[in-house]
Image (cartoon, rainbow, N blue to C red; front, side, top):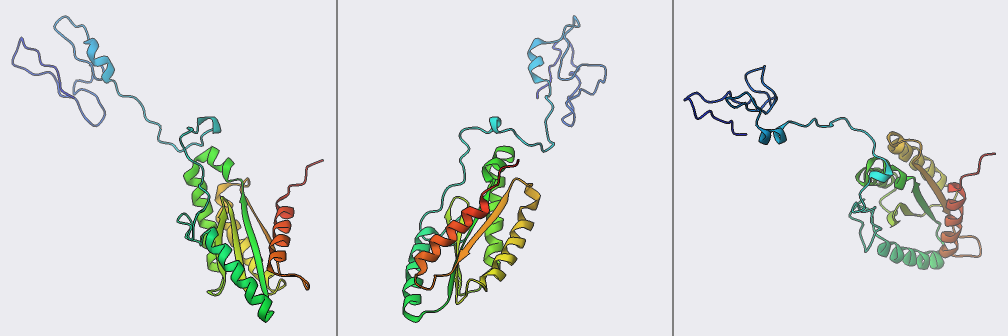
Length: 229
């Protein structure tokens, strides 16, 4: 910010301090220059410093600009947001495993995991925070499966997990570990963000597609919130 100079003398006006916006003369107003008559220059009124809000505070949903995009649904073979496989890979591996199970009658369990409350979380803190919660859960789920298992992001906040050589009873161990780990991940985001699981193995007279339907039914039942009396 250039300082005004009194052209009636060879002495320049006091320099402005860049640290706090005040002139070296503490008696003068911030950002103002005074002419010979003692009248402040109107042009410098616009140079007054404005306070900045630096404390992190939640934003209301009404404050979220419309241009902020929601979490994009997964596409293709790989989900770039979470690092998990994508829905196309999931469709392929489920068909392949269904054929393998039908031929060799090996145990397999399919599980679905879904996070609720990300939209409300984004309304308060922004979509980047919601994406962070989603990606964090994906990493934790990936750490709980074996190299022979598969995890894919299927919808905005839903994952599919294929547990090979695993019965429905044995899959409970995975579900308990994964649930506890993901709940620790989501704890800092508040009680409004919850996670649900549904899993199933093929019934005696069915195939993997029947297990998929049953696991989705169980997931929906777990995520259903009972109305309070």
